[in-house]
Image 1 (spheres, rainbow, N blue to C red):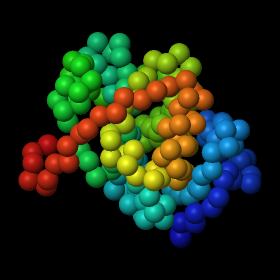
Image 2: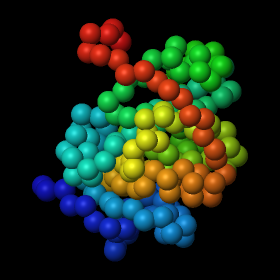
Image 3: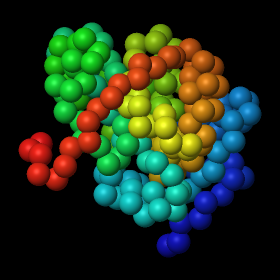
Image 4: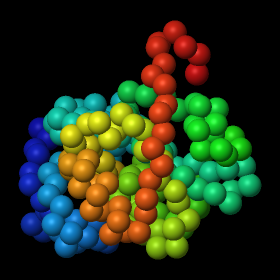
Length: 188
């Protein structure tokens, strides 16, 4: 199946989850332009490679993290080519070592499930329980790719519109972090 990049929302939203349709509704109401690819469920970065090529943009790895006590939650956006190491990030944000947050918290705060984590989920965090962390390399790209809260579609949007229009509209800000790029020889 060839992946087709189309402009805007699907003409027919029958059979799509409400969380996906809400993303399109919000983006459209904010005047944010986006292109979309529908595809089979993508659960890993490897599965996203063909999608990446079709989108022709930086695909962000989105990680939902928390502190040990599970009192602070973070959404980390890094380029798909970077690896996450808790010590590098914890030091920058002044937090105890971070780990992956439980699925229950992801569903509660972002209304998304594993494999669908995306900056778009912040629209569902009306109590601002999740802090967005963005690697500086994401901000230097003109566009980014992310899921519309489901992993059967991917969007390409202008980074500036996500950061300057979407984030204020959903009442979130970001902390910019600088995570290193590790070589193949570095241990995980």
